[in-house]
Image 1 (spheres, rainbow, N blue to C red):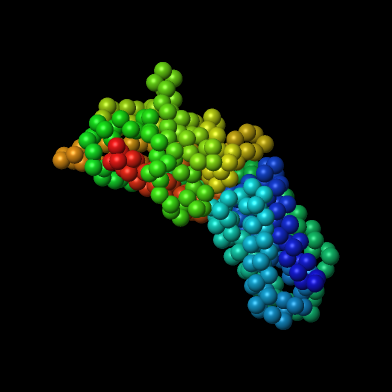
Image 2: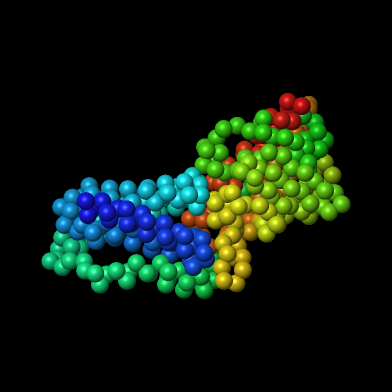
Length: 314
């Protein structure tokens, strides 16, 4: 029973660290949260039943995985994470928790030493290192993602649906990204006097945008104001876009611009191109770039496909 107690305590420990991140003691997009914390998650079951782990490679690998999955399931059910976060956080958590568990097994199989109660201060490492890591400047990486689609409609007809986007709910198709919680577009409204476009998505998400450049029937460029947008029901977007710290909002991802370009191909055919230019600020820039590319690329493709279906249907 003691060995299974280690799994439960390990999962609860990961949940406590996640709650501390919610209260800004450490950042989710950090070495501390995505590498150090899962290592300790892998250490805790080992501590509670060291001899069991020394005799079984299967348990050395399986127990950290069960601990991580239990933590993620609780986090998703409680609303701290969604399914996209399940993957983004789950991959490094499983990897590093297994790694430390295997390393501990290898080390203690070669020595007569035991883990003692003196090792418990290790549990405080994420808090200490998290506070320290927040003081260091983040690495900036500029990224450009573009997708295009051919719509069987006239150029002006496509253009007229870009500022005030019609109801896309009937044009949205089920995809892997939608299952993972990447927001699906519904519609948008445009206030020409205030020059503000509000983009409405599922889960009550609203993006607050300004038009910063406009060439009639050819090109329109938007700037997102994250601070005025409503992202509360999307843990993934909140993690990707920003994380609060002691000094205010620390932007993990900054949208430089979102651009629509319309090109007449003749014979009632129009090419619509959607591109996004953004900057990632992260100590784990490669991992951040990997997931940001996947999420934003899928988002662009889904939006273009929905626009195509709705415009062609009209």
